[in-house]
Image (cartoon, rainbow, N blue to C red):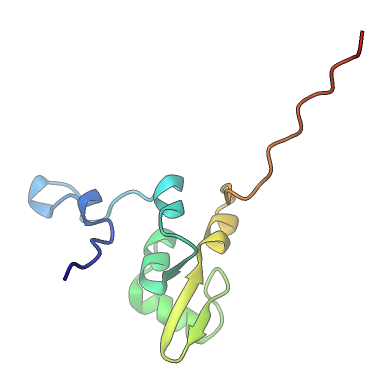
Length: 101
């Protein structure tokens, strides 16, 4: 049985002299899918896991949080919107009309 790697390969190990956290790019956020867990969303916003849960419990997390029993989930589109990043569902602009000759 295999388990998902949750972007483990994107992280550098501390012995490399690099920070343990990877840079969150638009592409990496899109790769999360439709929803993500609150710990991942917290990392994207630069929050600690404990702060994220505290803010979510008080309805103060930067974006809407969905609660399923004791689990919290965050829509990726809401994260992208809050960060003023393209959500990927925008329609490309119509091409300019050409004049008939």
